[in-house]
Length: 604
Image 1: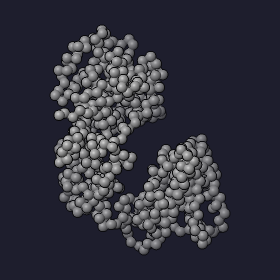
Image 2 (image 1 turned 120 degrees about the horizontal axis):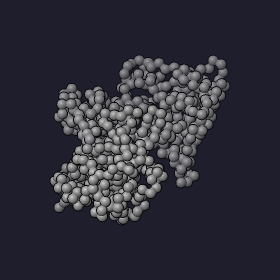
Image 3 (image 1 turned 180 degrees about the vertical axis):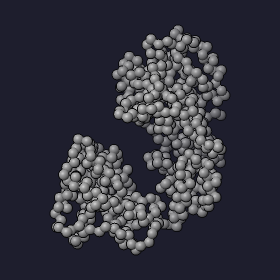
Image 4 (image 1 turned 45 degrees about the vertical axis):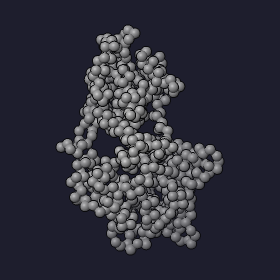
């Protein structure tokens, strides 16, 4: 019996394992809500401002009525349809909602295409559909006829908040460009910048999915076209633009091991059909696996950055405990590289550590020609896997004492930043080697949304305190400020150069001492160690001096959500707990920095 299901427009860009897990009955209780759609409200508002009489907004139509409302709007020839839920194509497992549907039309005063009856066109299109149910690729048609049986043509358009064009010079593939004030394809002009194919790769596949749905509903022209509203980053400005893309044009670069040149270009339509078919087959096999567990599932997890926030990680993680995509955390292998090694019988750290790398390369390199430096990355992964098998986290690169500057007073500095990179906490650990007292932690923080004024005020307070403390030191007492990596100095320089905020005298004092009294500890570590899991602060402090953070679950990125909770938490207690977590985490960072320095000085 044919399995009846549909996948929406996001499926083609989603992880196949996500789809597979959704179709396994044993995991049904773990199913999650789909990811929220892009926030297009401001772009719709601009569209409504420019075309108040032409926008049909279907976003608030009750769910049960959305498909019929979209069909009615398309049959009536509404020009700009927002949030249209297209009729599902159940035979081909498709469903989807378009951010915007734009009717094919010419601007006022332009010639229209010759009328073609809807009935005649319907027969012609139906006869041209292949056995797969996929439509042909041919010439475009405009509005078809003016009588009661007329059929309109629509194009799918996505509303995004990233660049679709860059620069002032068109790319190798000519594209058409429109604007929200003139959104129709007939009004488009040659693009003045280069269309960013790779940055909009997912969008092209989604457009292909929506175009297939429009075709199945009988409202598509023969040439697959779609649009993306985004930004155009030009030399002196950044403005909204509408990129019109021929989905049948060979724009997308793909890599194939058996081709002499290892790469070629395909259309979004063709790439979409390949990706979507794999996901459909994956869903079908998952459902069949429920009935016959001996059937192997099609998709096996590979850890990628998105796994950190994926609710399915509780399912995938245990399957990958010793997989290379998990264990090789630095210079990591991407999905294609991991799959190539798996195909050669190498999936774990132990497998790679025992392999003969020189013998692997002949079969491996042709399969991973999509990236540069593949051989170096594999050799690095091999070296890391050998150290892991040996239980070595930090490999000493050269023997002997490590010479570090030493001063009477040492201050360790660590800055915490929000998701936008604004500094909301300055933490400092004061160690006075002249005195017997333990190091003292000092912090300056603002647990509130950070704007430019708040960041400047906070920086001024922290730097004023630091300069004031140094000024109290007796003549001849040496001092230094230590930090780990250049993120602190880059933040300090950015704050000092912020437009509209002239640096204070104390900030100028601090800037004048960068590289002299203010020292980055990381380069000393880099010259002397190879880190299996990198040379980040936590990796080195844990493997070297054995420092343990009080909150093992927090990281630099993870603390950003805790920071938001520190001022948006539902209760006072929740906000206070979040603030204390961040302060403890920051204090652990500066104590770990001091611990690494002490440990380095002890090595011989």
